[in-house]
Structure formats: C-alpha cells, structure tokens
Image (cartoon, rainbow, N blue to C red; front, side, top):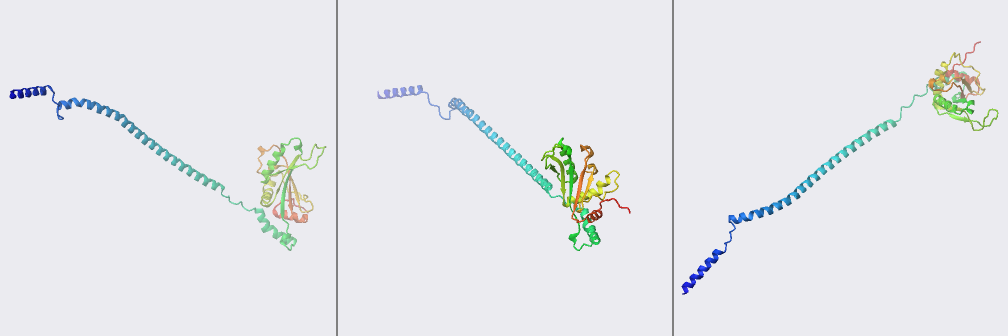
Length: 289
C-alpha cells in the first residue's frame, strides 16, 4: 500500500514538473535571441540620444576652435596694423623732425662785408677819423607809398601793401591820417599809405638789390641826382615804378605806382653821407668840371 502511494506521488510530481516550463539558462541561445532585440533597441536609442549630444559637442568644440583661430588671426592682423601704424608714425615723425630741422643760415650780406673791409678804411683815411665809431654808417632804410586814391577806393591799400612787402621782404605797415582835411574828404584814422622800415641784414640785402639790380633796370637810366640829401646826412630817392624789382610780376599788379626810398645814415654832414653811399656803389651822376 505504502509503495503504491509513493509511486502515485512521484507520478504527480513528474507531471507537474513537465507542465511547468523550465527556465532557460543564461547561456541559452533562444533566451539570448529573445532578449537581444529589446536590449539592442534600447542601446540604439541611448546611442541615438548620445550621438546628437556628441555631434553638438564636437560642433561646439570645432566652432570654438574656429572662433579662437579667427580671434587669433584678428589679433595678428591688429598687431600688424599697429606695427605699420607705429612705423608710419615713426617715419612721419622723422620727416616732421627733418622738416623742423633748422635750415642753413643765409649768406651774410656782401654789402655789409664790403662796408667793413673797404668803406670804413677809405673813410678813415679821407676824413681823418680818430675813432672807428666816428665813421658814418647806414642805420635804416624806409620805404613809403602815399595813396591819395585810397580815400575813394580802399582796396588799393591791399595791392600796395602786397607789392611793398614783396620788395622789402618784410610785412608793410598801413599808415593812417592823423588829422581831418575836409578839402580832400579825408578824416582822421583813414588809411592813406603804406610804409616799411628795414634794419640789420634785411636793410643790407635791400640796398644791395637796389644798387646792383633795380636801378640798372630803369629805362634810360643816367645816374642818381645828388640833390636828394636833407642836410643831415640822409638821402631820399623817388622811384616811379615798382616793376624795376624782379620780385614783382607785371601780370599780378593792378597799377604802376612809385614809392620813396629814404636811406638814413649816421653822418653829420651831406658830403660824408655822399661819400659813404658812393663807396657802397650808389650810382650818382658824375660832376663835370
């Protein structure tokens, strides 16, 4: 009896075991095949999600690198431009320094050298001066233009001032009336002339050009009259045309006008001043016996 019962139980247990499907082992190919598609799909999704991130990171990294390269190139270009600018500034500064460099001093007036080397010894021998300070010398030269027509047309003042400035090499001064004269419709303070006073090297330069260049260009020039002295050693000369000076261009003047030249000396008498100017080369009319 007991044996039969034991056999029945064993048969029931085997049937139950057959009804229950056995678990596939870890190494079973079917189980692995059933699990692989889900895992692969999940892994593919994860890789697909990670791939855009990686691509974005790579693009961001590449863009940052490109921006860095462009920034570096801009920096190099800026440095090169600054270098060129600094070099240009240095060259410009050098040119400016060269342009600001003092020019060579002008040659000393040859007429002044002639006065010191030839005229002074000749005057000392002729007039028996005991001191070299007694020898007469040229102190200043004055150029003066009277413009009566300036009352009606004030523009002539500008033209005359421009001509005198060009001749003298020094800015001319406009002279004004001191008193009012009703007859000439002139009131005090109105411009009526132009004048300039020369001293020093400019005086010697002008006197040299007057004697050696301007006077020989006068038409039918036969010499300067000796009656231009004032009794105190000063000599005045009237010129009828300003175009005798080569600095004046005929096409740029509005009118032929003359002016007066006054040579002021330190001589006490007219014979001393006459002899001084003769030794300097002033072409006076020769006196015939």
